[in-house]
Length: 318
Image (cartoon, rainbow, N blue to C red):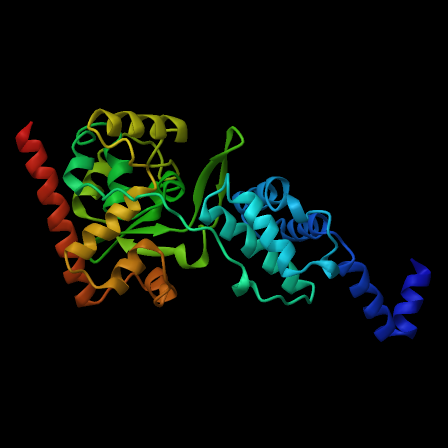
């Protein structure tokens, strides 16, 4: 260590070149592992877990090739080998991680030249909101389903929502979405952050949902609003969707349902993105001032009237 320090002090340029040579001599697998280890404590646990899965199970054709020897042809071979068992999305995630690692090590390749597999699966059209909501109205699953479909919360976000995250300002109710509860490896993981910085947001909470949430018995504002475990929620949703012939629906697709419904209502796309956390139009202002402009109130009124209309119709029918 002393010799290394002396060399660094006396010949800084030569030392930097030696360090770079050492780094690019690492294999793809070693470089991915180093990037993952360096990212612990910075990235979310679930993100680290996803990267570990990529390192262990994907791009295995090139895992033992040194970074400095890696060429586009090698990467294409790895993609071709994975395409038989992985979706286009999974392969794209793997390539994105590899590109990030190479860039951090000063290696630039033209990833646009990589040919990704086409997704030939036929996408089924989403059902209307009433079809999805009908089995859940009046049940213990109503709140999480409405939070996902009406307010576009991810499953991890709605499970991480506490009573203390609801605030009241000038006779309006807001939800502060800033932490998550994620289930993997057989246990829950609490993150004091959302999936991305863009996902941290404050949105209006519809009166119907506010009253429904507040009617639940709870002893402290520090309690979670949705107490259901991930597996219980997942299984109940799949079972009820199968019973009405919508077995292709998933919990995540409730966010697709949200976006499609709002688009059909003619809601401005910027507002849809803001509600869903897909973009960041001045989030800080929204989070800390709890204000919303008249146009947004108009949009939210349209959304709330639509969903309340569906719920009232379903209740009358029963």
